[in-house]
Length: 108
Image (cartoon, rainbow, N blue to C red; front, side, top):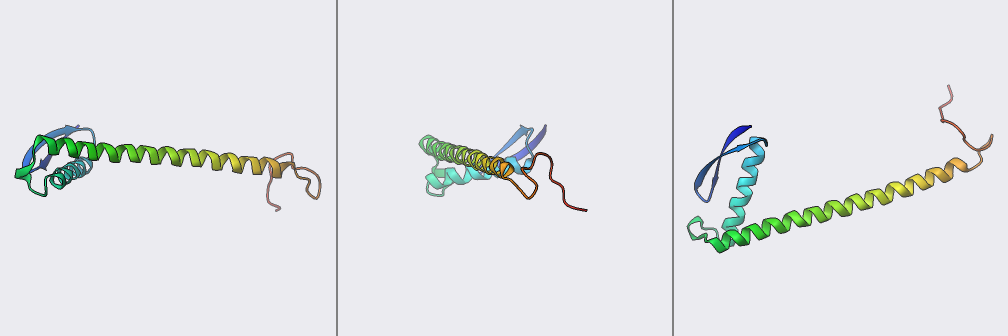
């Protein structure tokens, strides 16, 4: 675990984290950016409501990323099943000497 110095809204924080310092700093920069975006760019103008709006924006991005990951996983499973079915079918087709019943190797 390392200590990482970050800055959000012109305020410094020392955080302990198991994550890489670059990751922690990138997350802090993202949070800072989100807070400034909902407050019109000024650190001095950030209110509690702005922090809540920024948290909602960040949570929304997380949910969208999770949904995208789940769709990708589902599509990948479907594609793998289709490939498996095609391979199973291809292995039952007769070849010049009959159906393939074992491992296929290239001629020497």
